Image (cartoon, rainbow, N blue to C red; front, top):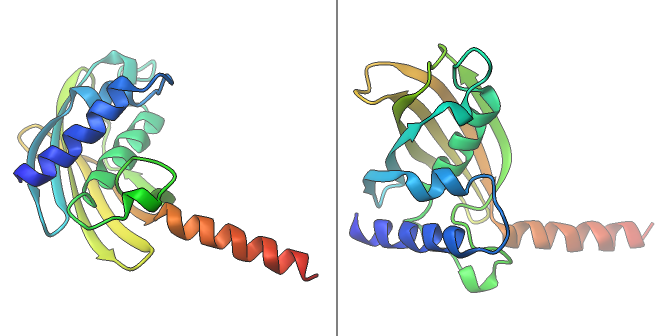
Length: 168
């Protein structure tokens, strides 16, 4: 877990030190890593205040998608990635597809646990499942299944697409 925490801490420091304002900076710098494993599992705890709510003081669906997108990416941290070849620094690649389901409303403010587990990791694509749960893990509020693609694969796809179009 120490190696994974170290890699995540580097990412959080990059977020904090970035000169560009990022809307995800608050969650990435205030979350707490609870557990992680080299098999692609990560567990974070996070205090959510009303900035993430809708007018009904429940977690906004867009905010839930942001949380799941960010924290499912962290489950890929244990896997080797050629960072020097990538055009960006975040772990886990880029979101290709995110399917999220709300199982029940999450009243805010609240402390939540976000668990993620990598289901599959290929050479350029990966699949991860995630859940937002109560702090005691007795209630599950949101679940997701997400496909991730490495930035390197996107660059290759762009080149192939451009060359295919130029042949028309």
